[in-house]
Length: 74
Image (cartoon, rainbow, N blue to C red; front, side, top):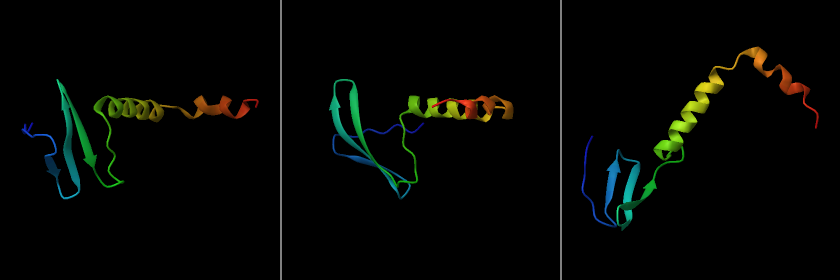
């Protein structure tokens, strides 16, 4: 892991396309601004892990598991 020190309004570049800027520092919280192309998803780690779990669950659905979905009444 690379550990960098930055002050408010200073930035870090990741490649040519991603800029992370320190927007605010309050106590033990740091607010980051992230500029990235739209085709690069940016998520908090806990959200990313939840998406990954849901995708894994969806990949385990068997063809018979969805039969009842078409029989729903509206």
